[in-house]
Length: 83
Image (cartoon, rainbow, N blue to C red; front, side, top):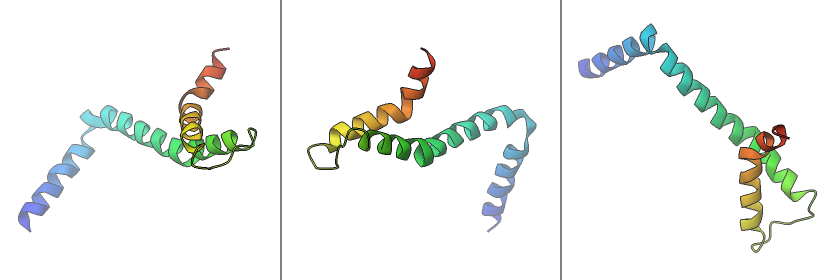
């Protein structure tokens, strides 16, 4: 058990070290962006693809709908801002 406690202490010292604060802020931002994309943007994009086009989730349409959804959830807002 002492090895586990030593590992925990080492990890806590690294996390609490202000030297690594910038690195952890970057990691936290990337994680939050992925979570936001998975929970908000991807489902919204799927609805956006299915509703206006009167498309369905039949096996023949799934690859097309998936590729459009991934494109919209990852790059569409940036594409619209450049105009």
